[in-house]
Length: 455
Ligand code: UD1
Ligand code: CA
Image (cartoon, rainbow, N blue to C red):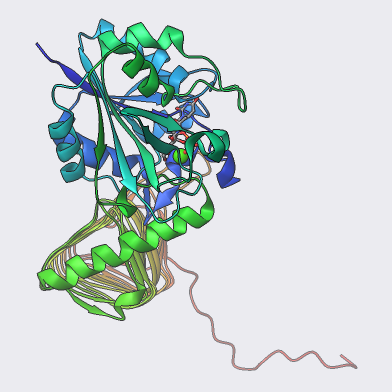
C-alpha cells in the first residue's frame, strides 16, 4: 500500500541571500518562507511532513517546535539531502516521498494536489514551468524522447541547444524503492562538487523507470527564492494578490498599494484598513474592525468594532469588541483588552488584561497586571513589575480609580472601588473602597527662600 510523506529541503545556507539567517527563515510578509511551505503542505500531508535541516539547524527547529526534522550535517547538495532522509522515511514505513525545496514560499495546496494527481503511477515525477528566461534555474532538456535536468552552470548550448525556458521548480515525487536504487549512482557535479537530486531524472530513465515531467502553468508561484531581489519580487507578487483577494471579498482598503497582509492572517469582509499598515502572522481581524494608517499588527486578534488608531504596534494581543487603541499604543504579548476598553497614546501593555470598559488613556506601562471592569488608570501610571530578578503581578479591582503618576510596586493589589491619589507610590495592598494617598505631604511656606549674593 502506498504511504506517502513530504520532505522539505531546508538545510542549505542560502549563500546568495548574504545573510546569517538560514534562507528558509527569511520572511515574506512577516512569515518565514518555511511557514508558507508548511501552510501549503499541511492540508495534503497532515503530519506526514519531514523537514531536512543543516545550516543553523537549531534556529530552524526552534522556529517550528511542532515539526519533525532530519539532520543533514554537511550540505553536499540536494541529492545528498535526499539520501540523508531516506533511511528515516523507510524506518517510518513510507513508500513514496514528495520532495520540495524549502525556498518556494508561494506554493499552494492546489498546485501540490495537481502535481500529485498527475504524478500518480510514476516512480519519479518532477514539476516544471516555462519562463521567458530560464535564469539560474535548472533547465529541462527534452531530446529524442529523453528528459534530463541540467543545472544552469553545467548547461552547454553546443550539447543541449538553445534553452527552451522550461525550468525545474524543485518539486519531485519518488518511490523510495527507486530512490534507494539510484542514489548510490549519483556522482558529484564536476563544477560544484555537489550531489544533485536532479540527476536522478536521467538515471531513472536509464534504469527504465516510469518518469513523468509535469508542466504546471502557474509560473511565478513556483519559483525558488535565492537572492534579496527575488525575495522582494516574490513578496510584492504575494502582497498584491492578497490585497486583491481582500478587496474582492469585501474588505475596505484605503491606499491599497501600501497595505501589507501576511499569508497566514485572516481579515474578514466588512473590516477597514488604511495603508500603510502591516498585518502579519496568525492575526484575525473581524468584520467591522478598523485599522488606521501606520499600524503594525502581528499574531493579534481584533473583535468586531475594535478600532486601532494610527502608529500603534500590536504583537500577540487580543482586542475585544468595540475597544479603542492608540494612537501610539503598544500592545505586547498577553495584552487582553475586553469589550469597550480604551488604551490611549503612549500606553504599553504586556501580559495585562484590561476589563470591560476600563481605560488607560495616556502615558502608562501596565505589565503583569489585571485591571477590573470600569476602572480608570490615570496618566503616567506605572506597574513596577520587575525587581531586578523576578516579575510580580498587580491586581486592580473593578471601578477603581488610579490617580495620575501613580507607581504600583508589585506584587500589590488595589481593591474594587478604591481611589489612589495622584503621585502615589503604592507598596502595600489597598482594600476595596478605600482612599489611599502615599506621597510626601505638601508644605507651603509663607515666604519664598531666595538666596541673595550678600546673604
Ligand atoms: C535547485 C535545483 C534546480 C531548480 C531550482 C528551483 C538542484 C541541484 N537544483 O537549484 O534544478 O531549478 O532548485 O528553485 O537541486 N538544500 C539542502 N541541502 C543541500 C543543498 C540544498 O537541504 O545540501 C536545500 C536548500 O536549503 C534549498 C533547496 O535545497 O531549500 C534548493 O537548494 P538551492 O541551493 O536553492 O538550489 P538551486 O540552486 O536553487
Ligand atoms: Ca533555490
